[in-house]
Length: 230
Figure (cartoon, rainbow, N blue to C red):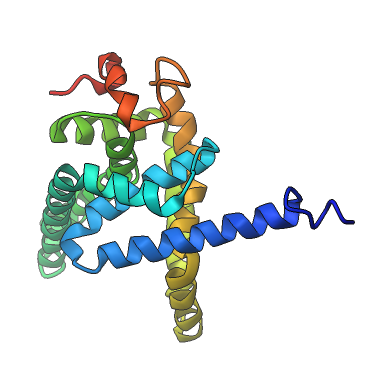
C-alpha cells in the first residue's frame, strides 16, 4: 500500500499528470485571450502534449512559452487564414439557407464538405507547426495529406472532439459544468488524448524517433517526403 501512494506510485503519477494538464490549460487560455494569438497557443499546446506522450515534457510552462515564442509569427498567420476560411464557409452556408431549389442545396453540401476538410486540417496543422519546420503553404498541405492518409486516426480525433463539444452544449445544465471543465482542464486534456493519435501518424514521417522529438532538431525532417515545402 505504501508503494501505491509513494512518489513513484500510480496515484502520485496520476495526480502529477492532472496538475500538469491544469497548468497547461491555464497557460493556453491566458495566451488565447487576444484571439489573434490563439494559433500560437494551439501550437504550444500541441507541442507540450506531444512531449508528454513522448515522456519528455520537463517543465510544462517553460516548454509552452518557448514554443509559443518560437512559432508565434507563422502560427498566427495560419490561424488568421483558417479564421478567414471558416468565415467564408459560414457565409456560404448562411447564403445557401435563403436560396431555393437545387442551387441552394448544392451550396450547402459544398459548404459542409469544406467545413469537414477545414476541421481535418485544423486538427493536424498546429501539431505539425509545433514539430516540423516548413512554409505556411507546406504545413497546410501536409496537414491535409496526413489527415487523409491517416483517416482512421483523423476520424477518431473528430469524433472525440465533436463529442466533447456536443456534450457541453447538450443543454443548459451540461453547459455550466462543461464550461467549468473546459476552464480547468478541458482543452489540455483533449489535446493530450489527441496527441496519442497524432504521435502514431507523425512517427511515419520521422527519419528516426530521436530526430523527431524536438522542433530544434526537426530541421533534419525537412528532407522527408511529407515535409518538403512548396
